[in-house]
Image (cartoon, rainbow, N blue to C red; front, side, top):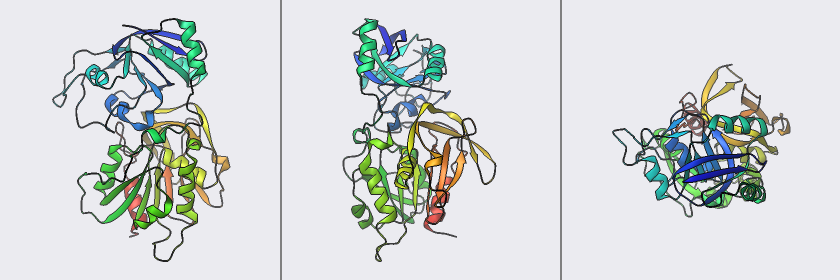
Length: 370
């Protein structure tokens, strides 16, 4: 079925749908990972986005029940150069097309993804529409321009859990009680916390600070999630209270806090910093990050379109620990007095390398110093 992708700046790309139909809106972005399309599709951080894969052949190993990062696909649309109708993997249960079709996600193939990626790199990530029903280019460009985009929107409310949960991942020698605030948490983060001995309670993003502290946690985790961190002021308020307003004698205070991705950005705002939108973001499993203490470069998995402004942070209180050597943007920070740290990238990978896996052990060391 012929499909049109129209961008708000007037650029139009044509292809054919291999799954789904209708019309979808979102910010169009690209991901440079060569594998891991199932993890990318189900990452809640992609809510509100149309994802273009730069690797040309997608779908060749199908879809299985193990490599998901949430209960369903979260993307608004999925764009590839060539969709593989033949899949082969011993764990595969269905094709990628069947999976997208089940969830009414539009998958588009036959698009010049190299040209689309180069355009996004030049002009920046922008609002877009995918349609199989309206094939009038001028009409679709107008619709893209009129769509909401991501800036200022609260997309967390669409992906957070609705009630307190205790995930059933196998815990290795459970020793610590951790409360994870769910802004769109990935399953592999929960697995990694479990592997390091954490019994995790996941709470909705709107859970107030006093309720979190009433659970008497040994540590607090701020999860990844979608969209603009300034679109969730209630989350920023809660983190501020967790850091500054609860030195109560019957609680262990201060409680160690670890943030990843959106959790890192929310922490930055709670510490008095500012955030801004990157031109085209960092998305893929091959992103370099420099540890400023050791000089070591980790190759990391990343998925973000917003960033904490380094210059906005109080350097008397916050230490910059990691930067992106490509554009010098902030990738990690640590509070100088309190047991609080965060990273912009994804140490849990899925997909991606495991160079930064050790950060989960750093969180444990803050909870129980050796």
